[in-house]
Image 1: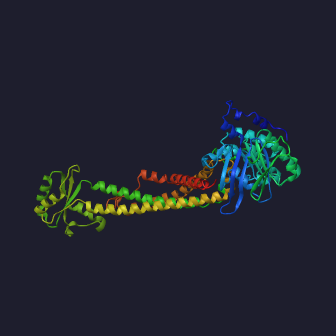
Image 2: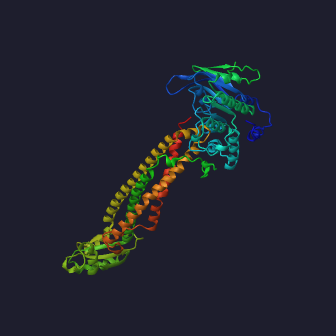
Image 3: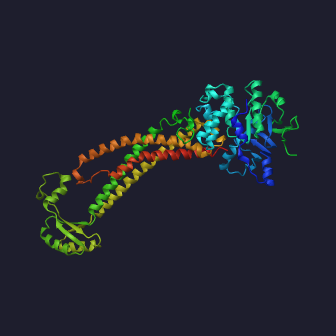
Length: 264
Length: 298
């Protein structure tokens, strides 16, 4: 996929043009996008599905989240995109301690996160265009601006002819691209993808990961939960491995990759 | 191609009309509005009747002389007319007596066929304090057996009965409002369950709770308004029929045992606002229900 105009505009976005030198605290907050400290999580009164998770995700990083089924990958992602609360431990997101952040301020944090759900979660009665437009409408953008950006983004993911199509009429791959478009349309600081390569062949999976890498080059931090060992080997990035609810960090094969992992 | 989600300018339209969650809600609300309209109309008619009775009897007293006490009437009249605060004292003639008895005994009554007490109609200055017991004693001295009736006793009993009826009507209005609110709560919860997936996605992409609640509240407003109209139309027809029947059952102008049972234009205005009240109740109930449900989400 060629670099689209909307992506170029994104690169030029003046959203972070602060010319004042940041304070040490601000620098520290900016340096860490997500921080987990001794985080545990259980559903109801069940067993702990995540135990003592301590990790940091740096801005601009690209991470694979791996582990066997039931290891807690989806639970970890849910904690990051604020679908669940930890049963213990401390989570800091975009410099905000979630334990002390008022509930009314959480939507603003969620808008900085794009999520590609495993089952896509497209809204069935809305067209592809309206599904992708949803995050912008929720954020209160004007309709004329939304139409322009969303149509262009859908063209970029190869769905120019399916703008008005309802999800039920799209193939699995097309639905996935709509889901990806919806996740990135609001230019999130953090993109989480839960098993995005699970239902596609290796060719499509590779194309998808190249798309994520392109977004990553524009500054978006990427976390991809996957079982696909071939893709993990082919795209060398830091690996967060979950096993029985416990996390280990495997450094990327290439030294140039962003640092991540548990603090020393 | 349109951004279908914004076609009404308020946000994403959940396909609530077709989900069945509110299919019966307009009919339930309609039934409640029908009952509330009748209860309210009853309250307003009764209130109006009591006010008309009260104002008609304000500043009036009646002196009742026993039958056969005709010789004392001039002395009684002289006493009354000399009493400070009495504006007018006039005895009722036979025709006026017959008119008073007509609702019970019918027309063609010959007053001399019955031993009727003589009645004297008194008009008093309502701004002056009249000592009723002192006047009654002076009357008894002039005409033994004479009674001074200020109408307050039976009017107070009437007020008590009217108050009891109004309380029952208010309770009916409160009950049907409560039932309507519960119906809306259950319909909204059903809608939330049906659209749980959509609601969760909206929540996770950063929608504020009020944005999601707005989806449901406008739907509830439409259902409430529809239900209000469904209930009001038969209620108005019922009241018109009842008014016509009551008008035919009593003398013109409401003279007689009962005053005129009619609604004023202001009363009709209040009744016509019922669909709006139902719609606003539905809107606020749905909004609160959704906000409370969303508050349980992380």
